[in-house]
Length: 364
Image (cartoon, rainbow, N blue to C red; front, top):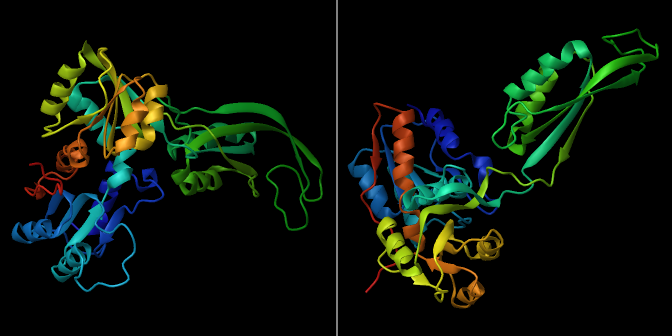
């Protein structure tokens, strides 16, 4: 398989549009026309992982964290990042990263944590903002069903658990064509009043080009009147973190022991015990201190995340239990999920889970 036939599968796993603006996801190293012999999936694409890929005859590394995060002005092998890039290029190994594109996915990093902890009734903790747009257009009654269905087919009209959502209203449209016009109804220089249907549909912003192509292809007018608005609505199914409920509440100490076993943590840092049972749990893989207040707002008894600083533990304020299990530990099952996904999508192809533990934090 060529690399360009694999990247759409990876984008289905973690749509690039879901990534945060600061992130660097997608194909980082490699030629899209390159023939791929095998895929090695890892957490961090370090030198040892590139060596493993060479040994196992895999020339595509799919990693969670992007090895290239900020720009490189020199590639001399002075830093670990430069050495990875140099070795990957030398051995024709492509590198593809998913990171926050998978963080924001409803079945991604945080759903994996929820599944591991057995959380039920899960929903997004920090919904993605400025991601929903609305298309408004106008057409004749004879065209509106065909046009509306084409917009649905292109991905418009999805709201939460519902598809094919739209609002349709009747009205009177007016126009008069000039000497260059070729009107569908009426003649040039004729003032026309015609019954029209106004169609309103929402869509995710990365689908705009596809939506507009469907609009122009299936609309009967010579000049298509349309409007696009950026909505302030939060996306219900895309965002960082999740919150859910344990099947049975448990004392704080029992909860920490439970987390330790399920997430395979050597150590857990936590805020002061509140001496109340844990039932509702918020999770956010990786550095999640920015979501402490949101976890409180949504009534979490505990917030499981990583990379909390000293003073941030004070923010618990006896309202919830802050649980820092470590950055790597909070994301440790992600690479397994990626492997399982790719095996289903590309059966009978070499897809290998890296044996390297790339956690840079060690415990004494």
